[in-house]
Amino acid sequence: MISNITDHVVRNLLQAGIINQENKEVYEFGIETFCSDVVNLMTTAMIGILMGQLWECLIFQVVFISLRSWTGGYHASSEWKCWVLSNVMVAVVLLLSRRLPIWFDSNVGLFLLFAAAGVILVLAPVENENNPLDADEVKSYKCRVRTVVLISVFSSILLCCLSNSFFWILVLAVLSVALSLVIGTCANKWMRMRRHL
Image (cartoon, rainbow, N blue to C red; front, side):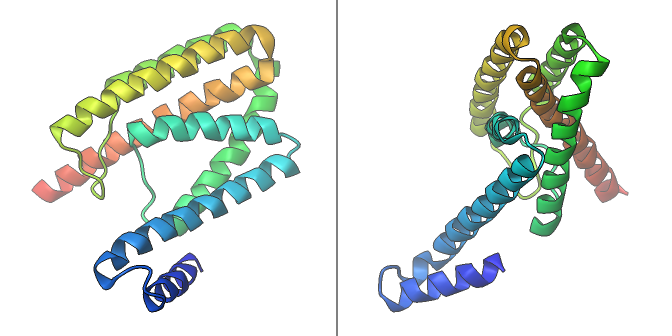
């Protein structure tokens, strides 16, 4: 569906003379990414509304996307799988954010937060075969990751005192990114081993 919309928009831009054939692929990528992001955001917001946790959902998305933009990690093999996994993850996180404050006190949350932040700082950025990074990019991404992790940890500590549900959302966002990095790292090692066999 998104590719059909992208093709239609790019075709109209070409016919109108707004873009030229040389830039067609760049515009296709940009429009497809934008449409995909809009669909994902709308779906996620619907999940938040249906579960009565729209603010928690939005906070999770802001923290998760801010970290994932610079950390890399596991990527699904297709857009469809990515969409399904992302939405399942959001629903699970929202469910857990309701239960974890009942099961555990905030000290457990702080321990999980610091452990996940440590994993992120050690592993990030994790490359993907579709997005290899050069040495300068790795250095730049590491710096940005440190900044976003520090902001996330500091915000979580503040929320620990103010709002238990938002605190657990931040903890789960950082944990989700750490888990993605561990899975991405293992997947990369597996791919390298298979190539050498």
